[in-house]
Length: 200
Image 1: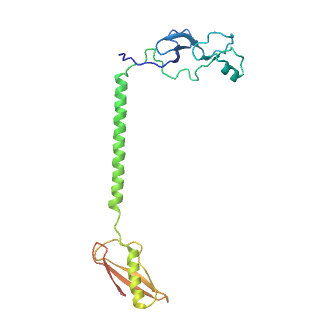
Image 2: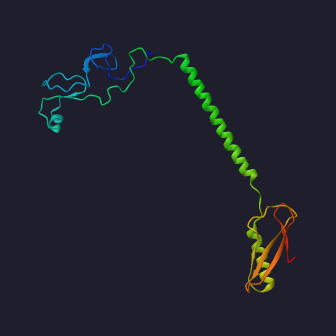
Image 3: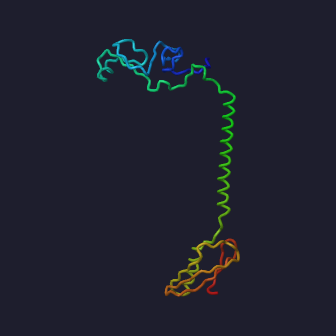
C-alpha cells in the first residue's frame, strides 16, 4: 500500500522550468505544456493534448468548422500549492510552537469571555429586586371598596414596591364621583401577603 499522498491531475508549474505550466496526469508529468501569458496560436488540426475536443457536434455548436480542435485551459492554473519544489513538508518546530501559543491564547480568551458572561447573568439575576404584584393589590382593594361603597372605585399604588416584611406604603382610591381616600398597605411577610386599611 502506498502511503504517499496522490496529487490530482492538472496544470502545475513545470519542475524542469521549460514552460510556465506542465500537465500532471496523476502519476507523472506529460509532454503537454501551457503558457497562460502566450497568445493563442491556430496551427490547424493537430494533437491538442489533454482537455482538447475534436467532436463535430461541439464544433458545430460553437460555430467553428468541423475538424478544428478546441483546447480548454484551466481558469486558475495554480489551484494547488507547488508540491514539487521541496517547500512542502511538515511544519518546523517554530511554527508549531506559534500555533500552540495561538491556540492557548484563543482558549484563554474564550474562557474569560464565558466567565464574563456568567458574571453578568449572575449580577442581573441576584441584583434584581423582588417586588410586589402591585396590579393584583390594586385590583383586590378596588374590588372590595367598590362592593362596600356601591360605586366604582379605582385604586392606584406606587409602580414598584420592594418586598420587605413590615413595610408600609400608601395607595390612592378614587370613587366614580371623583372623591379620593388614602389606603395604607402593610406587608405581612416576605411572600407578598399584605393587609390594608382606609385612612391614616
